[in-house]
Length: 205
Image (tube, rainbow, N blue to C red; front, side, top):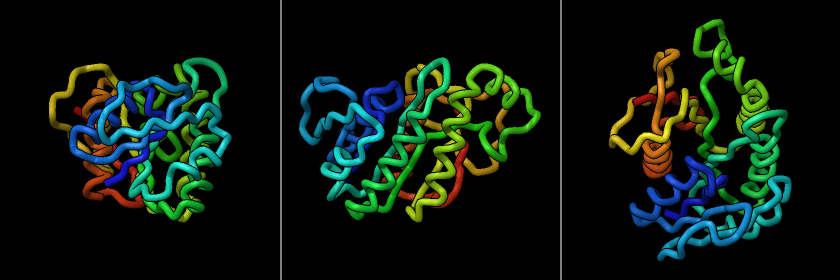
């Protein structure tokens, strides 16, 4: 396949790029500045410094089979990176004729924003990023694309353990985590063999 990855230079995006390449997929990595990745067969690095600019995406997306979004916002303060990035991506995908979108969101948004310990903790710490994810999700579900929105719990930098548990009704607890490398493996797995089209899978270790 040809896999296009938004937020490719981020912690999860880097793992997604390496996983897709290791599996033999042509990989288009959208990055904010050039030279993020060591040149490698099958890798095309595309500079995308402004997430509101759909034109750079439109030019590079023709021929892609799937877009994976690993976009993330600022660590602190208001952020619209996910919302604006996905708005641009939806526009570009429709122009380029790409219909499959897999996006990383977060557990605790929209209907999963409940009174659980996990939800209360995450909103107490990163409410601005959660609002951005909520806005992003609304754009995706209204896009008319063939989408999957992945809602992981806390992300960690653990090395890949090579397995995960995923499901739309998976219980998420305060202690639930998933390593970014295993999350990336799930993203590429879902790109290769869709199991969660038009749904919101959760994933844990």
